[in-house]
Image 1 (tube, rainbow, N blue to C red):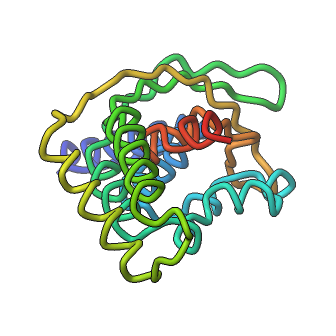
Image 2 (cartoon, one colour; image 1 turned 180 degrees about the vertical axis):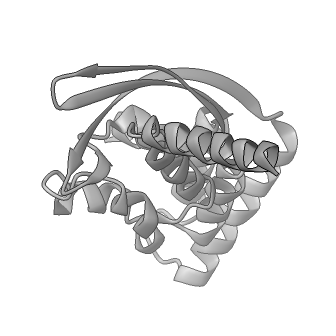
Length: 196
């Protein structure tokens, strides 16, 4: 009987020690990455420092109203394939920096080739600008689907230092970079910046 009590007390003590050591941002980073994989933008922003979430950040990712459904579907499917590993968590005063190793699909080639062919087609066939929204969507969707079949997915690695802060007892990503959001969006942000 004494042995059972000793085992139970030992297990409870170990659980207490493990839970005390879980004071870092690792769980929040896990949840953030799962939200990226699910392409859940609301959840993604719930893990960002509320003081750093502004309309510009949200506009950059508020693509559901700004992008064709075919592209959105492509990006969501790619996001499901994100893998990651959190390494080298270092604390410096109130900021913790976690080095996160990501592997994700780089959609740069497909996105560029799709948009190039799309703009060429539109310029050749609809130079007067007389095209319905439905027809426009169908053309873009057809070209994208063709490129997805022609071009093999390219997986790339990214090592990103993510700064995290604790506010009111909760961990947040302090200032997410475009590089981090590019992981979720298959480099769509980088491609669109080069187009502008």
